[in-house]
Length: 542
Image (cartoon, rainbow, N blue to C red; front, side):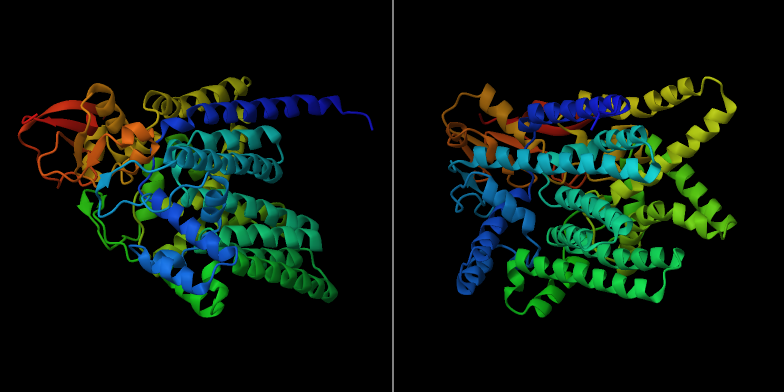
């Protein structure tokens, strides 16, 4: 079979694009700290993996009871088990901190967390490639699909989280893959695709319970597609059989991947679902200048997506969503709905989870990260908006390519600049809708809920202070980034144990309510724009 030379350019371009992306990712993964939730996720993976591999129920229950929050064992743990199995094993005891006090070292933790970060990034990178395939399939152009992959990468918060968030980014990645397998299932309608989509659905549901939304979306669009195609009744029977196969595979694998379900699967799954629906989190959280602990305004996700996404994507989303609504209202042609089916599916995957959270009044926190899995399908709507914008430019301008280049350069320039200039703090990205300058944003929204600046703080203190033992107190709690330090450096640190420490570190987690520090001088600080995101004080007594 002769090779089609026309395919050489897209294959080469796409290959170089993803090679460059992987190259950058594996060069910088060591720059990020350990997020607050990672040690708990490590232990959860350990406990669930032991049960998954045949451990006793009594031991599983005893291990769960030792955790600070026993409900953690009800969280789906598939990706946590994968990370535990593939990252180097460590000493599970001291990897969790005792009452917020650290006096190390802990064995092998640096290797564990670097490996976890590489694996988390690798799974996300795979999903970026699948997102390219989705964009190419829906919008019928490989170049648009590749632009979608670029948009997903140049999403500063998502990019940063893709290295150290072991929960929200994996479910985002699995959600992308499940959307793609659903598109394949709708296109092929055979038993292989039913099983493949069942596996993808089981994975996303076994990472985060809200991934369950893909099941009703699958059922609706499968029968909606049959209705549009005027299928005879025998077609509906075959469809029902394929859907039943999909559901059996999904349910069976969710049960297998979730050890808490091994006893009382129905009762425990209901409890798991209810915990995730109304998660009892009541920590301090600044939103629009107010502490919204233990409550979530209905507009929370909408506002966060609006202020944390590049403006270009928002404008393209408005164009795409507006055009889609207008065209859908204007026509009743069956052919229109058939041609737009995949885009409607993307809209459902983006909007329905947000609507469900609003209706259920679910608790969200820390920059809307629980809803990140909606972001890729939202980007698909933005890509559709870009295609509509292209159509307008082609009609109005002879040199429309120049206008496209100007729009993309201007739209992507600031997010790219921010990612390069403030690396590894891409998670602090806001657009101008959040505030005209960073000091204003700091008073309106919590900046760093996961203490990602603590890695730089610890490394700077250790580098500049050669005292044998160094006492450090953190206003924001105990930093998990201590686990990324070499064991010799860990052994020098005593954290949050002394009444009169040598250093006090403020990461502004509770800004503006944290106590003001007196009796010390500023030793080191990190700024973004016009405001500090980290300050180290050296106490006068030393």
